[in-house]
Length: 244
Image (cartoon, rainbow, N blue to C red; front, side, top):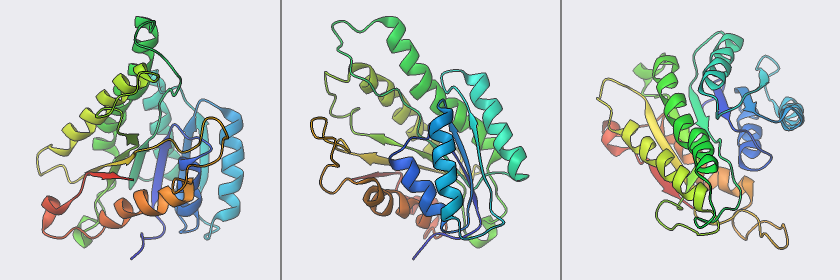
């Protein structure tokens, strides 16, 4: 079983790890890919890789800098993605987060508020935007649009060294779960691929065994893309959280 070809995705908070592996895989299926991040250099580098990986020379890869902490900038960037593709999105992946060490003892309210704007408010804003901009063309064939929010297990197993991130991602993941219980008329699926360990060893910078980005995409992300197209027994069979 594999995901359909020739669909469209936007990713907010693109980085050089999981999201890079995700878009390279989707490019190989001929997807239109829109990349959003604060880093122009990261975007340009990954966009060039995606172009080389694309299996369909008619598919698009576009990118734009955007600040996820600014809700107006985030919404404007998402609107731009739809304009570039001239169609609504099949999948929106919200991956933005400020990953840095912080300790609850000396964490400032300003730093916590900033992280909440990126992870919590950003998840809300992107999700609300997607409610109005998800492509519903394939619903008769059983294919549902997907709002995918990347996360971990810090909401259940907080780490003192990542105090601010724990609080901000807890808000993000709670919002994701709330989107899941929207009325049945909202034919949009919500998914949370949750990575339970650090992807790289902080001392060696090597990938943690079993958690290389390509492995995570195939084992954790791919089932969401396949499942959104082949729901059995309606939305009740949908698995919103998958943990690796």
